[in-house]
Amino acid sequence: MLFDIDGIEYNTDDYEQYDMYKQSVVRNVMYKAYRSLRSVVSDNKCQGLKQKEVKEKINNNRSQVYQLLSFTDEEINSIFIFIEKYFPRI
Picture 1 (cartoon, helix red, strand yellow):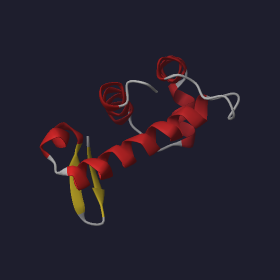
Picture 2 (tube, rainbow, N blue to C red; picture 1 turned 45 degrees about the vertical axis):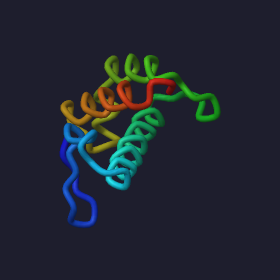
Picture 3 (cartoon, one colour; picture 1 turned 30 degrees about the horizontal axis):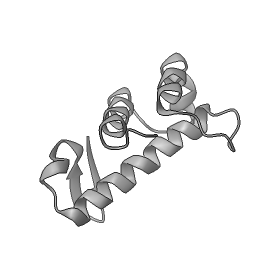
Picture 4 (cartoon, rainbow, N blue to C red; picture 1 turned 180 degrees about the vertical axis):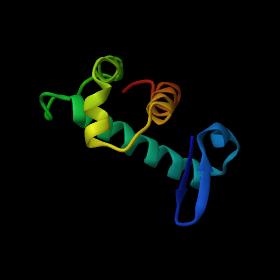
């Protein structure tokens, strides 16, 4: 997944080749994107859903995500792939 921050392009596929600073930027952006997805499907904001539950709810009702967020199917899938790989305890 490609994204741009302050004129610098980042690619999640190149994550492991980045230095520590760039990795931190990518992790931060991807986690914020995941939190946005989680907030859309979470019934109770105080009780955090596990990553597997969030993915299940998103896949069952993607139209709700499309209405509230500007993520495409490819971006949603990329977010989940990144989160599963680099944030396994969520």
